[in-house]
Image 1 (cartoon, rainbow over the protein chains, first blue to last red):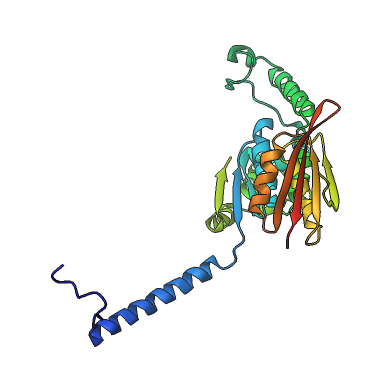
Image 2 (image 1 turned 90 degrees about the horizontal axis):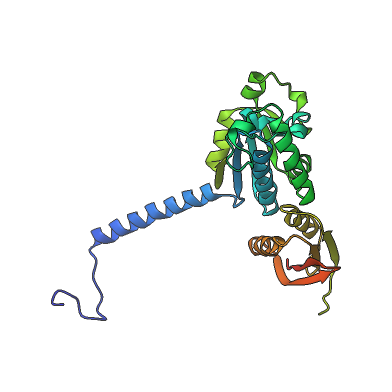
Length: 194
Length: 83
């Protein structure tokens, strides 16, 4: 305690120290202003990359996207590779489960590989979806678009899979690529790969 | 208890995520001070709508009731628009 100044007394700063502190305050103030400008609009944003086109994997991106929109989020779902099937108007009505390599299926892999098995398990799953009042993929696409979700179809994979822009639901954004998806991810609070 | 309900949304028979999405849609159309009643059969709607109201500016969850209608569980949610 011997070096401490007595309580209540003022600590004198040299002119040099004061100037240094003022400079430091100024630097911090401008840093805070920059951060505030960056934080700019306080709207929240989520980006989902949807890469799968089986019936079970079509649900999570659409359910999360429409729910996040209800929470006031600005949402983009970037569909690429088999994820395009979800937005493909005709194919989306005929999405299938994969029986092979799915340990949750009630049949062993060796039987699951038989012709017609995917159709059978898909029919069972569709029955369960209907019985449990789970919305269809088309309904979820509809509510997502109505809620302002930007459903995007990756242009490179549209070309790769030989699709046409008109194959997709009205309201789907085409002509977008990895760079625009990445840019949106940079600005997003939540980024998911499904 | 009686509540001054302005609007009722019936989402009976609909499952996640529909109750929250329909709630949000109807909530948007309310004026400040009005109360929305949401009637659902999805048991998940209890935590979903509570979570939604908690995260949504101007939404106040007044009450949630669990009742039975013809042997079916029914969940009623009351959300007030405060601003």
